[in-house]
Length: 81
Image (cartoon, rainbow, N blue to C red):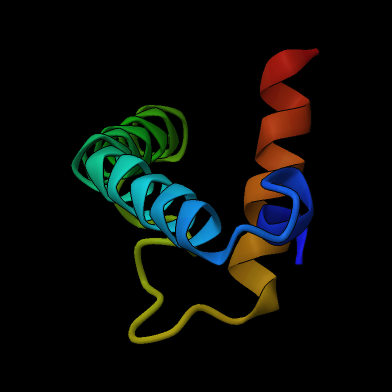
C-alpha cells in the first residue's frame, strides 16, 4: 500500500518503484556478508586474545544456545569498562 499511496494509486509506477527497491536492496547483500564475516572474525580474535582458545564460545557446536550469548555480553561489558 505505501507504494500505491506514494504514486497516487498508479500501479505501474508503484511496481517499478518496488522492483527498483528490490534491486537496490540486493546490491547491499555482498557488503553485508563481508561485514558479518569481518565482525565475527574480530569478535573471535578478541575473545581468543582475552580468554585463550578454550573459552566457552569456541567449544559451542552447531546453533549456539543462550549461554555463549550471555558470555559474550558479559565479556563485552568487561572489555568496555
